[in-house]
Length: 118
Image (cartoon, rainbow, N blue to C red; front, side, top):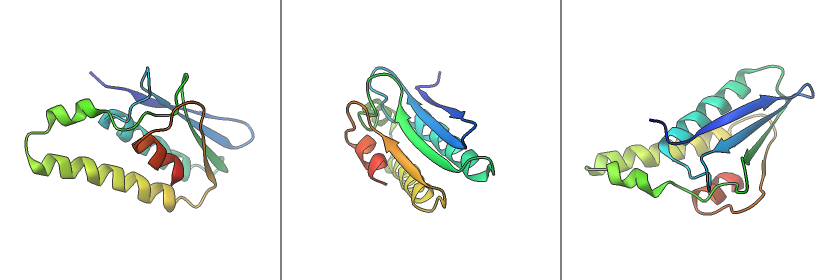
């Protein structure tokens, strides 16, 4: 069962809004990170998208990495895989070529704050 996701809307003005959706605090689970990566790559390919807004659904931007993800880590290589995913997301944001902003409403902690700063 997936632990969170992202949702995306593209307005007629060419602004894509990507919502982090993992209530109650929009923790960045592995599922959320993969979904975010997929949506971000999609908007970068789309010619009708001119700008990107990343925000949280509900009352929180993101409280950071979902610590329950660490419960599944049995070997050091698995931790490295998680870190590579976060690093890949940072690279995608930095190299986007389209204006991106984080619309923060509520807590932006840990990895959530890091993503908003990128």
